[in-house]
Length: 262
Image 1 (cartoon, rainbow, N blue to C red):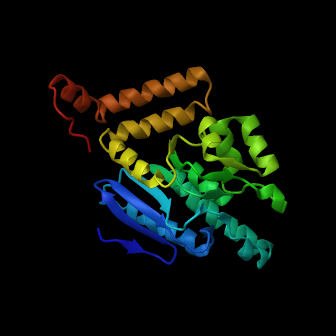
Image 2: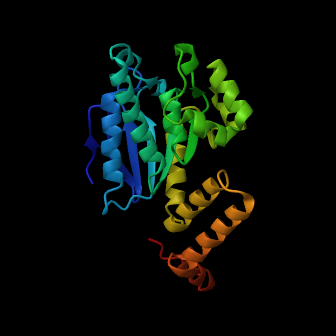
Image 3: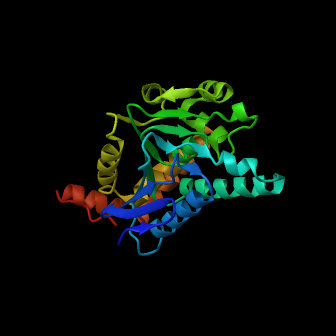
């Protein structure tokens, strides 16, 4: 598949099953209409029936920024109806990423603030360069995070830490973000994309249906009582054995060969 480019977003295959999505909306990757539309187009490419995508990696080629947040200049120029429409568009693309039937990794260098952080929270995993900074500063504008930040951040770092970040609007360093679970892997500054792509290639070797089931079952742990969560887990593993790739994985292990996963 050749490289595809919109006004603010480019996407291309880095390796089989791994689609690299690059944000390049100068000067700071504000999540305006062009970037939202570009992300939607990249997801169209990733989720096309014949695409074979297993992992999406999202990064930025704007120095110093992963994404600086919502488009404040746009918000200042619109009325309430426009504000609601813009928020709905942003939430829709973030939710689409969060609910995509493939894995996603955010490779973060520089600032990931507001909607930029919310975009990373919609990814399955986050890899950050050592100089990255994270924050949800919306209270400084008299607002709150509006693209899932109030819901996804506490699930990652806990209620108290999430409140500390959101109530103060402060920025969190990459090291601190890693220590509280906001970041899954910490890379040397400038190496987040390299590490994220290496992780993506590793992820493509496992069973995609099993990985999707892991994500579903772990997410259920936050929403279901323990007994119901265990029952859900039992249903997932039964489905993988009967209709998924479980039998192939077991046979490959016994036969000492590489499994033929989709």
